Image (cartoon, rainbow, N blue to C red; front, top):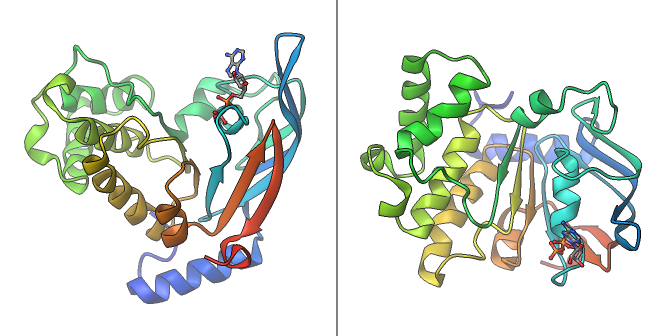
Amino acid sequence: MCEFDHLSQRERELALLAAITQRETFMIEISHVDKWYGPGFQALKDCTTSVAKGEVVVVCGPSGSGKSTLIKCVNALEPFQSGEIILDGIKVNDPKTDLPKLRARVGMVFQHFELFPHLKIIENLCLAQEKVLGRSHDEAVAKSAKLLDRVGLKDHARKYPAELSGGQQQRVAIARALAMDPIAMLFDEPTSALDPEMISEVLDVMVDLAREGMTMMVVTHEMGFASKVAHRVIFMDQGEIVEDALKTDLGF
Ligand code: ADP
């Protein structure tokens, strides 16, 4: 998954940290972004931040402060009116950018899983691999099986989403996003629709991903997750980024 794969876990964490601290390679660059919903309501105000390759950034703030809107702008699920977002060197708001192609490269995990209810778990994982990436069915099935195993759900491949718990469905949603070999993952309150006892099973998968060097932007209220793996924390309020600090500077 990353260039540090040959190193031990500890060496890898140190190498990643060094690369992130230098912040030389940016995966996501957000510059002076303004976003209005309709003519009267400005949801994002002059938002500027960046996410280095391998960096884990937690976005928090009160409800309605623009967190979800901000991460949806990153993969162009929401258009914005001014400013610029560059994703792995590609300008998101350039009319020439192939948005479906760009979105296929960024994994997105939503609060409400968004699995297809009429498809089995394995089919949910295979669909975009085959339709968007052009993988053969066998290749997609093999990749899906591996990822289901990784999120602890290999025995559930033939079930339908409704037969799984919320926590299991969210782990399927993460596996589905990973099946596309994303360059970065965006999470929009991935645990807030879950019963409390299911939150940790989802967070554990996310912690593993973070430790493997995945670039992540995570909207969450789970400060335990932030303290464990985030490198930076962004606080939003009324559409503005009011604080953007290294976790160590925040004292946790
Ligand atoms: P958060 O994720 O911090 O709760 P959101 O980004 O969802 O905040 O929303 C920011 C503001 O934009 C809120 O006031 C919300 O009501 C408004 N908003 C979000 N989506 C839409 C939409 N599709 N149309 C109009 N207003 C919206």
